[in-house]
Length: 139
Length: 396
Image (cartoon, rainbow over all chains, first blue to last red):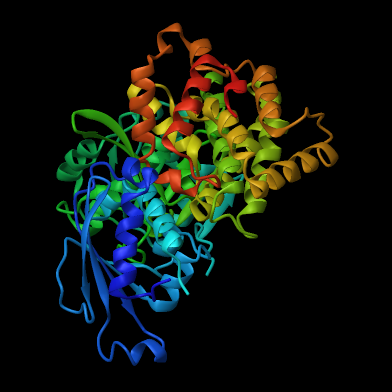
């Protein structure tokens, strides 16, 4: 199982998205890349990513993942949608301890850039995306 | 982290006009925008409220033309004519009036450029502690908008009329005044329709993903009150004591769903209501038992449903059937409410293509994610088909 977060994990996520019928159906119409940023890394990951916040830009288009770009430090990287959260909060979401929408409501996931109006229409796609992340898993 | 947002004050069983007059003086409010609809504006109680709050140094503007199920463009249009500095906005009416007032208050506070479509509970609007205060005086007994963070507005998306379910915790009215006398003249079909809206809020919030120890008592109390008092109102629409309980239930359900979320019945009802022009309470109430049966797949939801059934049976001494969805259908039979679209009208026997379209739209409704069982597209189609035909056995 690849380490989270890492380039390998991001690649596996892309594969899982493309195997998900649920995501394909619920994300019909979503055509924007999303940059997922991970902040407040624990010490063991800080040894790998010495500075900044690592992130993955996932190229999502009508229910399909067209590719991912990996950044050891995603600070300053632009994307139509940017979602950031602490490492521990990502873990809670991916492990299913916290529902992704609750995580947004409770400010544990932050939309740094993008339209809430559009995101509201794709909340089920967000749930399917988390299911894909759960398939990839976390050590 | 769990939160509970609710109005700062709920005035219960008050005479609305007197209570409002006292509050306006107490808060040193000198300018108000009173928002209502044409029907309410012509009611004697509305004129009485106006006379009771009238004082020389109070500047009052009135907008009395809120459309049923208002649209985003309605709000923007009225904002252009009524933008001003007010100490308070007072909404007197049902859900449409209160939702409209919330939306108007956003534009008055943030300016007309603000996109109402982006109102979401995910971030601060920055208007919680700014004037105008929002005071709600509900005149129906179901929407719970007087205690909720929600707004439902219609909009046109890709040339299709849709209902947008929006919400933010900063939109919970500051004060709500509950005076059941204001709902006495409501026609019985609207008393039933709005009460079933409250029942749907309560049943969905009971099992929603953010349901918690603080929200469940509000959900449970609402369900008990609807089962106990709605049949009494149907038997005697002027039964003020029962109407009070239904009005309280509506407000309690508003608190519950604001903090717990709703679910699939609302996600489906928003689409069918907008597409077929059916009153919201009617269509969501009708959808509810089908979604409850679907949600029996979740052991947690099942436990919650069985829990409230025990309370209703043991404490309220009401005889129930085998499961919660049948109990709801039995309640509908008792009050003469149809449990299928076809029973409501033959014209609602919608085609398979239309079912597919509504299922796809429901999948994009923000309420859907709060459902305890995440539905697939095929599940939603199944539920709509069952709802059209009135055959709950279609739900597996």
